[in-house]
Structure formats: C-alpha cells, structure tokens
Amino acid sequence: MSAPLLTVENLVKHFPVRGGILKREIGRVHAVDGVSFELAKGETLGVVGESGCGKSTMGRCILRLIEPTAGKVTFEGKDVTAANKDDLRALARDMQIIFQDPFASLNPRMTVASIIGEALTIHKLTPTREAYDARIVELLETVGLSADHRRRYPHEFSGGQRQRIGIARALAVNPKLIICDEAVSALDVSIQAQVINLLEDLQEKFGLTYVFIAHDLSVVEHTSNRVAVMYLGRIVEIASAHDLYTQPRHPYTEALLSAVPIPDPTIKRKHIPIAGDVPSPINPPVGCHFHTRCHIAKKGLCDVERPVLKVVGDGHSVACHLRDS
Image (cartoon, rainbow, N blue to C red):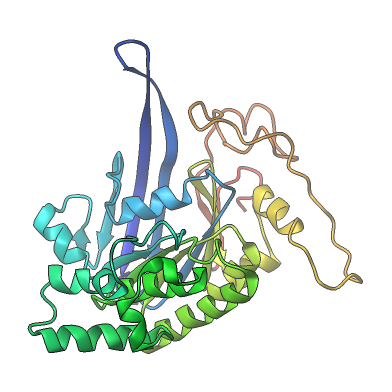
C-alpha cells in the first residue's frame, strides 16, 4: 500500500484559562486530547461529534492555523508541526480549508475576484494579468458561478453562492487536501445537497482528499469513506462509513445513531438516551471521558483507566474497555 497522504499522531491542543488580577493560568481547556489517524490520497474522512468536542480545533491544528500544544502532523512525509514560516506557505498550496460560516469567512470589502485571486497573487501562480483574470473566471465556472460574478461583493450573494466562492478560493492553488469545516451546516437542506454534490464532483475531477467535519450524521454517511467519532477531544471510534453505521461498537456512537430520524415510520429502532450534560473540557472526567454518561460503564475500570483505540475489525477501531474485542 502507498504511504498515507496525511498522518496525525497524538495531536493535542489545550487553551489556557486565565483569571485574577495578574491573569495567571488557572486551568486549561482540553480541546483536542490525543487524536491520531491516517488519511489516504483521494479518501474522505468524516469527523462527527457534539458541538465543542474539538472537531474544528483539530482541523485548524492540522493546517497550523492554530498552533498545537503537542503531537505531530505529517503531510506527504513533511512534518507540518515543525515547519517554519516559509515551509508553511509552501504547504498552504497543498492544504486548504473551507470554513463553516459563508457570511463571516469572506471579506465584505473585497470583490469576488480579489477574494479568489488573493492566493494566486501570494503564491505567484499567474504571471500576467490576462492569466489572472482567466483563472478567476475558470474557478467561478468550476463551482457553478458565472464570470460576471467576479465584480460583485459578498453581500450580493446568497449563503449557498458564498460557500461556492469559498470553495473556489480553496481550489485556486490546486490543493491536494481540503478540510471542510462544517462547510454545509449553515445552509438550507436543499442547498446542502447542491454543495455536497459539487464537492463530490470536484473530488472526482481533481483527485482531492477531504477531511469532512460535520455534526449531521446523515450527511457524513453519504460523503465519507471512513468516519471518526469524537467526544471531548478524543476519537472514540473510527471505521468505514458502512461498518460504523451498520455495526457501531462504542456506546456513544450507538447513542448518536439511535437519535438519527428515520423517514420510514414502519421501521422500529431502540432509542439509547445519553444521560446528563457534556462535562466541562476544563476538567474532563478521569479515565474514559464518556463514562459519566455511558449506560454500560463499569465502575473501577471506565472511571479510572483511559481506553486506547484498539482494532476490532477490518479498519474498525474503538476506544472502549468493554467493546474492544
């Protein structure tokens, strides 16, 4: 097998909490707490979990938009976490991000041409003005917009159109990896389908690799080859989309899937409630982070020892003391 395009090893990101007159550190938010996975070229890895579980922070740490506290990120054999400023600029051509909010992620004072063309200028990808203009028109048409749109400003577009502009901006540098950070969650359902179809078409056309971060399990099921489930900064289960949705192993995954609506009223499915609220990431539970809400947790084990991701099947790994075989 070929080497993975992206490798994440024990990635950690803690945010300091400061208080008092001297603003001393009084605690830490454990946003990402030891995440590891590999991603093959052309693959789509879906990342799901409740709000605040660390999905977006993980994505930003991979790109070094946020500096990780510890861990290692390797892209095509290059250590991203150890890269200097010049190396990061070069890596930015291969790794891009599509942000969640299409209204906040575009500069309202810049035209569409300037927004998309900024990366072309920074990386010196178009030697002449004619090539610059032609590339912008090509990118707009690639994402389903017209050449006339390049002279307009973001406020003149709908949410779906703005997200298409964001996609065009990400494509401008011909990246190999795109992190889709809840790229469709702010859109209407009908528009979500259009954008997802566009992303799939672009993946096939350009051989793109995606990390698809979302909280909508039904969306992730149809867009991803593999799915990773996160809870309080940790991956608790990772498997192929088919295996995860048909044979979930972790109690948290089972509970999440049991809450997904089924359009057929004749199908009966047992609902597994999740007790209580998500614990504070400033003071996460000892042992398994999920044990305080788990219906099968075992006292003296789950509340003491941290479970590690163990392989339980072909490409299927789970971090659970009671489901690791």
